[in-house]
Length: 114
Length: 113
Image (tube, rainbow over all chains, first blue to last red; front, side, top):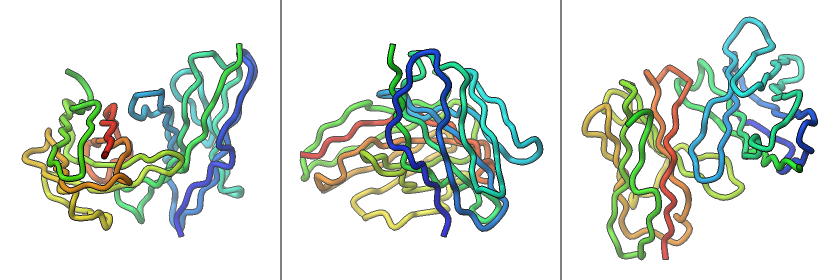
């Protein structure tokens, strides 16, 4: 079955600290992977995506993610978190077997302490 | 207007009411989507339209009725809803159905009394 798991429902980090949000997926074909961010009262904004090539991808707002096929993971990282990064983060997977359809994880809520 | 817009942003309705949610995309895309977002649950894909044709209906109850009159507009008509239908309804668009990058609107927060 195709699925996305974000093991951490809620994470709190101090401003300036590093961040890693975990994402594991189950997908039968070549996966296309995404991270979206949702601020309160807003829709989802794409942070970054992986289709092929370099397994370390750079996104907006200083975020990056690394695709590890052997671990079925696509973890999101940021070296220094800002208070404005507090939001909900969603990992999603799509691919050739699911034309245009994205499967989302449950989301991780990030709280940033001053 | 730019991107994907949704109106209204908030809606409160009784179970016997009929209302409609509107989505408009200003990106020239050919595919549009309705999602339901409930607290602590993954986004649920409801409907997919490609070139104004419905290509996916994910077992959504008939009290939700989508309409796509052209590639820029998408509606979700609501009637005789249940309290458990209260959620954030998100609209998204993509250049084609096969393009996986989707652009989301801000959503309509629906409360069913």
